Length: 344
Ligand code: AMP
Ligand code: MG
Image (cartoon, rainbow, N blue to C red; front, side, top):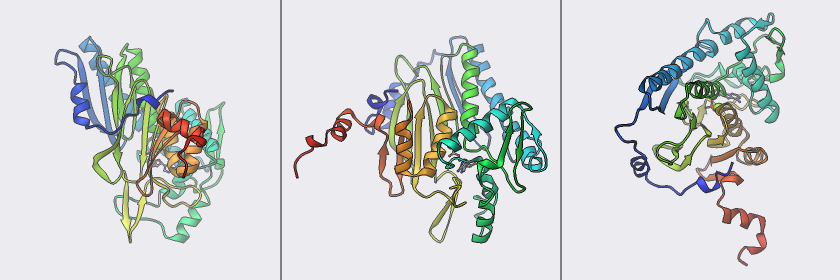
C-alpha cells in the first residue's frame, strides 16, 4: 500500500469536511448507535434508498449479533460460556468464534505474546469505571494464568478448552475489527460500494467518499479530545487506534488503562496511542493493540516488516512516530543515504 503520498500535514478538519460534503440530492445515510460497549457508526451511499436503508439496518443488526455471541458480560454469550466451562471440559463453539480465537492465537505468535486474549485472566481484576486495580500479590498470581498456550483448540468439533482453572479470555482487542469486516462484507453483498463503518476505534471504508475524494480519518490527540494530531485521507483500507485514554483512571499519578501487558499484568505504558492502517479491520484491530503493548521500537520494527501495514504512534512523551511507508519520500531517502545529510 502506498500511503506515503496520502499523509498530509495537519489541516483544519472543518475545511476538509466541507469540501467533501455530499449534495442534498444524494442517498447518503449516516447512523450511530451504542453497541458492544462502544459507539457504532455507519455512513454509506447507494442510489436506491431502500438498499441504503437495508445496509444500515444490516450493519446494526450484525453488530448486535456479534455482541450477543462474543461479549464476556452477556451471560448467554458463547464466550461467557467458555469462561464458565472450558477449564472443566472442551466446549463446542460456533465456527465463527473458533476462527476468531484461532486468529487471535496467530497474532499471539506473531507478537511473541504481546497480543494475548488470556490477558483477561488478570484483566478481570481491573474496573476502570470504579477505579479498582489488583494489589501486587493478586496481580502476580493472576498473571501466571495469562498465556495463550493455555488454550486448547480442536478444529474438528470445533471446540475450545482451557488448560488451567482460572483462565479467562476476552476478545475486546479484536472483535470490533472482526465485526467491522463482517459488516463491510454484508454491504458489499448488497451492492453498496461507498461506505464507512466504525466500531469505537476501528474503522473500514470502501470506495471513495464523494466525487473522487477520499475519506478523512483524524488521529486524535491522546491528551486533548478536541485536537487531531494527523488527518489521513484514505480509501479502501481499515484504520484502528488503541489508546491509553479510552478507558482509564489515575491513582497517585499512575494511569491504569485497559490495554494490559501480558508479561506484567499491568497496563502497557510505552505509548499513548497506536494507529494502524491495513487492508482489513480484524488485522488493524489486533495489530493496534499488539503494537501498543510492544512499544515504539519493537512495534515499528514489526509494522515495517509486515506488507501493507502502516502505523502512526504517539509515544509516552507525546512525540509522533511513523512507519517507513508513511514517511515522506525525502525523509526515506535521507534515511537510506545518510551521506547526503549535512555535515556537522
Ligand atoms: P483496542 O482498543 O483494540 O486496543 O482494545 C482494547 C481491548 O483489548 C481491551 O479493552 C481489552 O478487552 C483487550 N486487551 C487488553 N490487553 C490486551 C492484550 N495484551 N492482548 C489482547 N487483548 C487485549
Ligand atoms: Mg485492537
